[in-house]
Length: 100
Image 1 (tube, rainbow, N blue to C red):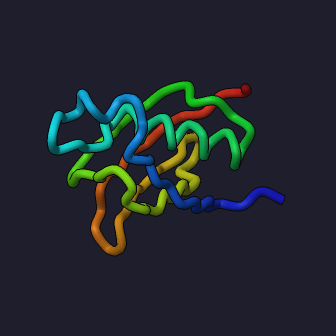
Image 2: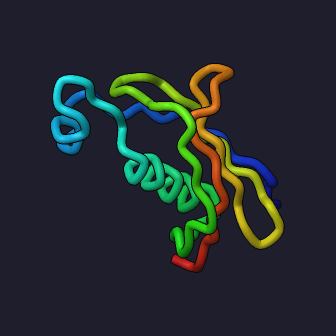
């Protein structure tokens, strides 16, 4: 039986190789890395690869080593995602999956 919602924690380590360049002295987790986490969650939940990012909005930064929550929710043929740090919304969007 398929569930309509999937949640997982995400935490990007301070030693991730992309962080020194984004930004030196004040690192932020890049949006593309957050989308990679969405893709990983989509594969874990539905066994699908990320085929299309229909919409993505990054509204607040995630710092290295901060523990955030990623939620995927069915939205018709698409999947809605939200990334939150506590109650604060960090990112949201809409993606499409395809067979892996």
